[in-house]
Length: 357
Image (cartoon, rainbow, N blue to C red):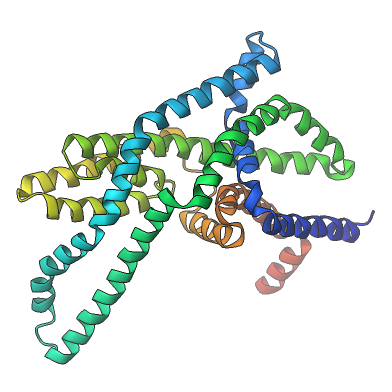
């Protein structure tokens, strides 16, 4: 098969993959989640095999322990989290009204040179946009808890994901060997090298960043709850879970926490302590967690991650979000490989030489 035919073959395969992802995104979520969990814990299974356990036994132990721990944690925090989500959705309008009254004197002073009519127009526009944003957040939170479709999706994930994880983890090495046998023999070394780089990128980002998110989420939730902040568990866990985008989770969590603290507390010391929780979290993340657990050379820029998540969510909903980072890692590695090939090719060197002449 000529290189052109090979390119056509793999291009067609990629298009079929995108089409199937779009058509089947409603049923793929538990399968994608199970595959990602299997990838996440595969190194643990390998170590248990090295310790003398069979692959099936190692897979059974890991799967049972993983989901027992997950269910145990969820059973402890889900009732509280559900109450806080519904309570937060109900309190959003009051937060909006308080913050509008709180910031109005400062805004008036800043725009003191602006005519009264223009100021009213600006205020009306800002108030309308802000209220709409709060309303959207409140509706999304309510649908997240009470929506029938969301409940069905949650049940399907809880039931199917452990089964998919077990079989994927048990047969992981077999599947990898089989896929390796399908690779074109002429380019097998290059393809293996690129897959190794993809694995290193995903291991560095997914496994490392997941650990960072869990640690930060636990720290924020515990710290805000100890300070007595309303909905501290919800805000803290939410800020931690979206911390895979550097600074984004902390900025969102900080803003929401300060807004709640301004409404709840009259003592500025307590408000400063709430801010201090996020300041400490950022120092620990930047100086210890991210350098130790993620590293600095995973090759996934925050802007690229944001774009991948938005594109994945737009294309295939929650399933697309789950696949966004792995696909982004694959594309990133392939783009860097293509760029290296170009810089080493006569196409680049000839043009570079002509420029020098």
